[in-house]
Length: 275
Picture 1 (tube, helix red, strand yellow):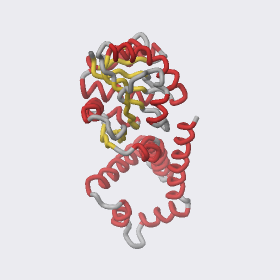
Picture 2 (cartoon, one colour):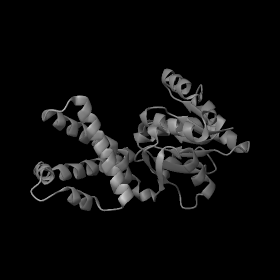
Picture 3 (cartoon, helix red, strand yellow):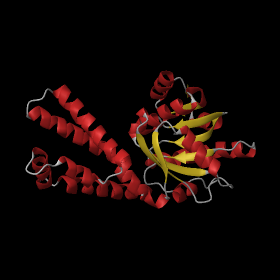
Picture 4 (cartoon, one colour):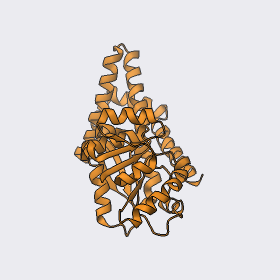
């Protein structure tokens, strides 16, 4: 039996599949996507296996990663219930791992009502940077979840970036910051590069300089342990060009806009979970 099956190979699912292949080897990974061409192409690229359908994927592995949109997850779980039941009665344990934003463990459990036993169930929220091993992922599960289930998921995701166990009540907040955050950062990099072009830099160099600057600044926060505000102050000389730029950002409502983006994403996560 393989270690991991992924049902859904879109942007986020694909990122996790790539990380899993690095962590446990492509021979231990199977994937299924309703777009068979996408599934076959990704499997061929990574050297893993593409399953004919979701049932075949579920049968073939112990940890089942559910990487479909929240709107169709109930349908997918209903399709899987008979397969899960057969495997359970044959003594083959399956551990379900959902990446659906906003869908709580309690809701997921209700969608498994076709089972008269409780399948192990965890939630993980990744971001797309997991594809290159630089993701930020949160892992949540019921308090009584045995350690081997936690550790098994962490092993499969070990090459995806930083994985942190959190209380599920913080999952929507985490998603608004880390799950959605790359999109905000890409906009920042694009805007920095546009500014560079405006003042005369060639486009290619401006983009590289902006991206490397964001990468270095993030590393400074993580490695120094200092507050971002203190690190910002260290760059701002009295009467200098940096503080002039910071003042322009303040006039434009930069920090307020970012805070509002996180808040909007948080409320949308809740709405997705209630739909």
